[in-house]
Length: 304
Image (tube, rainbow, N blue to C red; front, side, top):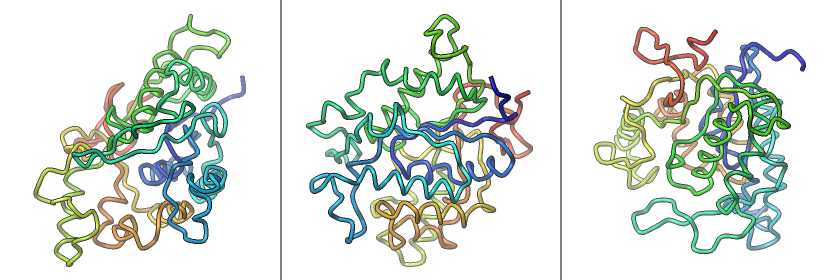
């Protein structure tokens, strides 16, 4: 086996663009520091809304060619961040974007009719077996994925959480599927966390500036829902300020999904830097090694 870099980070995401929104600064930082960064994307995002009028024909209800286009968008975004090892779970297009609806409570939910090849319909063990060999090959010390709610309820995010969690457990068992490589037990596992205090502060700034439409319905002093993580659960914060420009350029690379006139970029100005510069995490496996302010500023902290 070839010698691996000293630090190795694995991220498991549902669709192209999820990685950039949640972890772009983190990925850019660790690439710059010489760590190996491996991204697994579970679907091609075929059901995404197309925000570029000239590309509207790519939509699932027209030519259904959005998936291949988003492969290119992802490659361009990863080029901005310096990530050279990005793969699709089981190969490009094996698992179809499930799509989503909003339920009566206003939360993301599973559509009433899902295709048999959708990621939501995938057999959990079979999908985990597509990830186990990657874990055993890369041997990451740190895994990042979603929480059990998929951050905001998207079925593919929930499924990505389940697949990553199950695969991490199976990969650590020496007697499980020896043909998939030597066992590897990931020392630290994190869930993405949208930090409550920073969201409230940025929303207050937006409202004070007269912006009532960006993230409409979110009250900076009210209930922000399950997508936002209380500060007491946030165990690590990566300062992304040095990488903000690269994060924004990576977002722009996902042009069919993120428009410069939309809320993401409304929050990329001075009113929103708290949200997009700081990337928060919840440690769910392993031992935290917090700094003087009580949280980790390095996901590899405490590892030998």
